[in-house]
Image 1 (tube, rainbow, N blue to C red):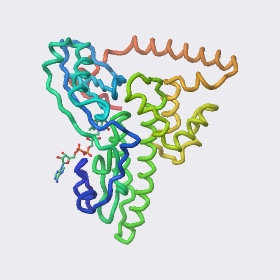
Image 2: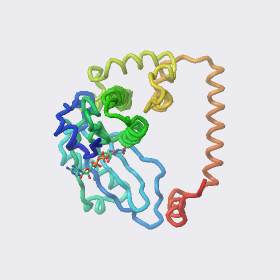
Image 3: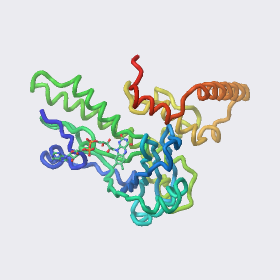
Image 4: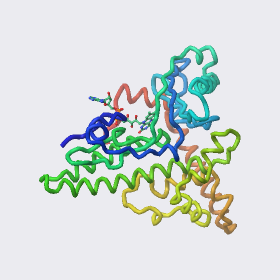
Length: 304
Ligand SMILES: Cc1cc2nc3c(=O)[nH]c(=O)nc-3n(C[C@H](O)[C@H](O)[C@H](O)COP(=O)(O)OP(=O)(O)OC[C@H]3O[C@@H](n4cnc5c(N)ncnc54)[C@H](O)[C@@H]3O)c2cc1C
C-alpha cells in the first residue's frame, strides 16, 4: 500500500497511475498566491487571535498572527491582475500596519495554484492524501481538514485482505468526491453573496453562470428558511449546516430576504445582547493572545 503525499506534483496517483485531474478553474478563478512574512514592530505588539481575511481588487488577503511574525498573503486571479500589480497591492495593505519603508523591503514568494482535484483518490494500492489529491484555495483551510479525514478513513478501512481493496477504494472515492464537491460549493458561497461589483474580478466571481446548480438551488431554498441539517446528505459533513449559517448571516443574506415575526426579532435582539455581555465578561478575564502564547511556549498546554 502506498500513500501519495507528494503535494501538487502527485507523483504516484497523478504521474505514475495517470489519474486525470478535474480542473475547477471555471468555478474557482484564483490561480496565484503571493506571500510575505511581516515582522512585528515591537516585542509586545498585539497578536491577532483570528485570521483576518480582506477582499481586495482581484481576490483576498490573509493576515495570520503568529507568535514571532505575521504571515500575510494575497490570493488572486492572474486574468484580472498581474503578479507584479498584485504584489504592489499586497505591499500597500501591509504598509498600513508597518509603514511603507518596512513593507517595501520585505521579500515575497509567489505560488501558482491549480484549482482542482484528481478524478479518483484511491487507485489499486495507492491512495493520495493532501495536495496530491487536490487543492482549491486557502479560504476556509479545508485542505488540512481533508488530510485528517483521509487519514482517519484509511486507518478505519484499510482491509486485511487485498480482495477487499477495490471495495474500500470505491467507498473512499465516492465519499471524497462528495467532499470535494461540497468544499468547492462552500468556497463559492463566500463570493456569490458579495455585493461588490467595483472591479472586473468581482463582477466575474459573482457571475451566476459560474455558480454550480446545486448551490443555486440551496440559495433559493435558504431565501425562505435557514440551512438545516437535512440539507446535508452525510453524517460527517466537512461543512455542516451551521457553517453555511455563519456565512449567510454574516453576509446579511437572511435579514434582507426573510420577513420575520416581530417577537422573534425581539427575542433575537435579547439573545445577541446577552451574548455580547457574556463575551465582554470572558474577554475581561482572559490574557491577551500574546501572553497566552508566551505562557504556552514556557509551560506547555494545561493537561486536561
Ligand atoms: C498559498 C497557500 C495557502 C494555503 N493555506 C492553507 C490553509 O490555510 N489551511 C490549509 O489547511 N491548507 C492550506 N494550504 C494547503 C496546504 O499547503 C496543505 O494543507 C498542506 O501543506 C498540504 O500538505 P501536503 O503534505 O499534501 O503537501 P506539501 O506541503 O506540498 O508537501 C509535499 C511534500 O512532498 C515532497 N515531494 C514531492 N515530490 C517528491 C518525491 N518525488 N519524493 C519525495 N518527496 C517529494 C515535497 O518536497 C513536499 O515537501 C495552502 C496552500 C497554498 C498554496
